[in-house]
Length: 147
Image 1: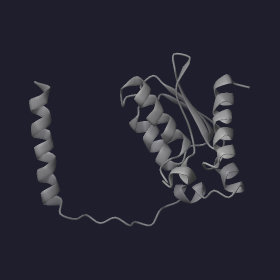
Image 2: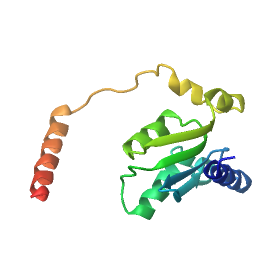
Image 3: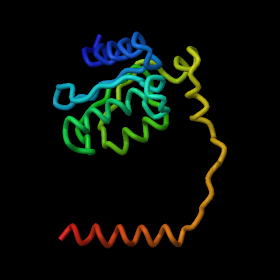
Image 4: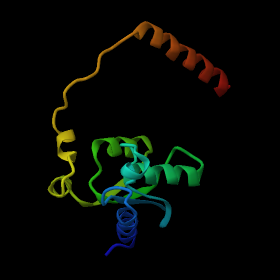
């Protein structure tokens, strides 16, 4: 068994035994060293974004003092859901290793599968002009800080 996946499994077990949430544990590795770890804490924190991958990304970013995890690898007990996959991409993580797949997750009662299907569009554009003004304000401030 891979030592990093074993650590992710141990992290998941810790969360299960503490009643924090589902069987989802994760570690983030850079240069052969674990720099972040987390497990599902949705139930504990009453927050649907507290998936194992997100918790590990938060921990790794805190430990590195950066939001950029370029060059890191992520080990997780289950295939990342779309939210976690997005967070992984935003963090610039280079490689993901997962244990169980979407069908495995579905088989124990989690509804990840539905998020891979075409979602109902619940979005509507609103007050774009005012928001574009805000974006221009941000661009102006950012450009001044660069020089």
